[in-house]
Figure 1 (cartoon, rainbow, N blue to C red):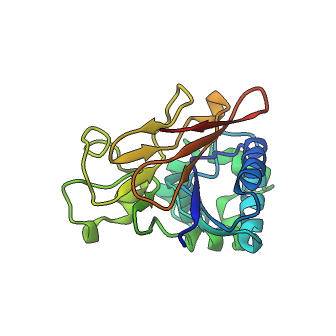
Figure 2 (tube, rainbow, N blue to C red; figure 1 turned 135 degrees about the vertical axis):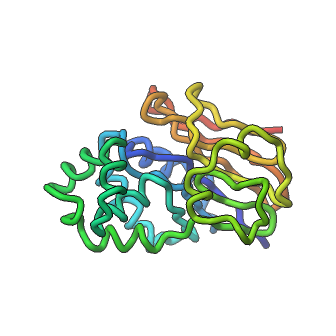
Figure 3 (cartoon, one colour; figure 1 turned 180 degrees about the vertical axis):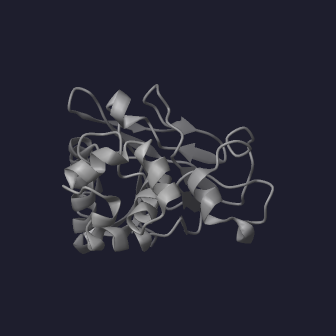
Length: 232
């Protein structure tokens, strides 16, 4: 029997929201085994990127869930900067990378903990199951599936967001924040980046065993609650 899949959007250093959402997922799963997919961008912008990394690294030994951690473009820039890529460092610093360095007590990106850098480097940029494709940013509708590069998966917006394209499976992604704090639910794709740093809403979509979009949404709120919405 296929397991329920919980998919979490961009976290961006919001450890307290992550903790509340993971607690709500545990309650919702009611002790059943499930899959837990994270869509990347774990760092930058929010107050506790280091705390988010530590919590996610600890999920390796999760007793109820099979955990999949996808790489986001922010995570990729951090890892590349840590390996001495100066162009990646320059770009990362414009995206709040300095706050991550301060939280780790590092003067330089090359001083970041080796275990953290290797953890990010090992992350895939795509995951799929029978009915869905999970990716951080998107896919290029004009390229065959086997020609989609990591760069496309990490940064795609134009063309993907502007067109309703059937990729053969429902695409679940983040990367483009929805500043109304609500996930974008489309026929062929679901966007789970709900701009948590600005909105307080960190979102998880619940996907049942069948095809298509989510059956329910769990989301944190500014009132320190986790709201559950069942979808038709």
